[in-house]
Image 1: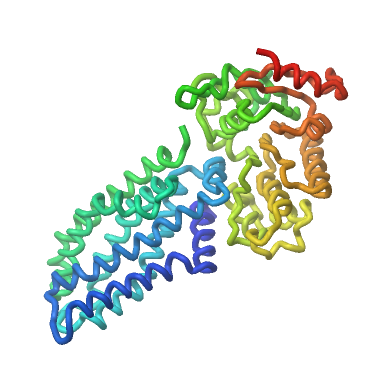
Image 2 (image 1 turned 90 degrees about the vertical axis):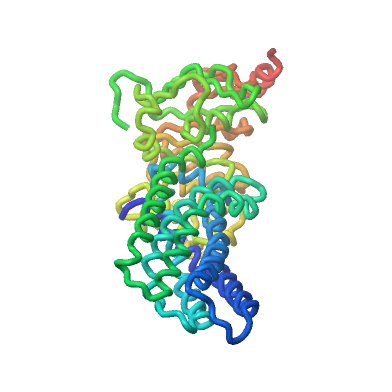
Length: 223
Length: 241
């Protein structure tokens, strides 16, 4: 088994035991959806584009809660130093952490997307499955950028404040594209029609992943 | 770590480390042969932990080199780390995992063939086998320190670095650690330990060194040192300008 797998399995084991990140992400995201539904008022329908915006507000804000926690755990008892003196390269540590964040986002969305359709689904042509490509592509880019920046912020005293301040401007293009792609899916457009929107999402994901992989050693190592 | 013929196991040459305007290390040089056990003494701020961090590849020196069997540490740090063990001020343990899970995780990270078997063997050696399925967060300081030592030995390291390993250990645990270090020394593993505790250091080491204000002001073989008078030597070194 590879070193990345041991790292990934260790984090998921702790997460399953503590239920800190996944549960808080899901609960917070569902709460945001309910509040927005109450604000919308009874009997009103959202356009696909507005509904997509509502979904991404809930997904992005809830995901930030989990991102910070996954890396903060390595700062307790100095575990990050143990990873750095191990033969696992910083790139391997980054890849494993990004995969943990990706898994948590997917698990949280497995609950949030059905809740979204229950609350806002009336009048939308596209179903939950149509959202899968755009969700997965954004999740990949978001978890890569988020893992890098959570490593930056985990070394500071106010990491829970610093992480969103650093992360949101960086992922703005990704979220803007995600809203368009999701809106298009909710409007019932075929996958082939949505490809021009999905391709840039994949490109952003690759750029964030490559940047994270290359920059991570400089973020976690002391001078 | 491949052997370089005729080279000492560890060569530290002109090591300097500056933090801002403060010099933590001011030109430290020494060599160690395979199987030697160096104990470095010194007061707080002498540069002991900085030296250990550089040897562990956690810090880069401002100037100077570290070579293992003639090969610069910078050339292949990952191969070096695979054969390194480190006991630091912090435990490097995950409170939410059990003792067994912690050791299995680290064994996997180091590519140990049978992580479960290695974890069991080490838990027995540090007398924690009966508590193997308890979460580490529930352990006393002494138990955590014993598990920390087991963690550092998970890859059967060629070079073991120890930063104040006796801190928090009761007599039983200290005796277990002494036995483990003795066993490693018998198997020609190289050990570098930094401590304030003169008695513990003298009883285990084959080389004794004193760091003061970032300089290695004393280095000698244990056989050449009068154990009774070493305390006087230590304080003389501290007073020297």
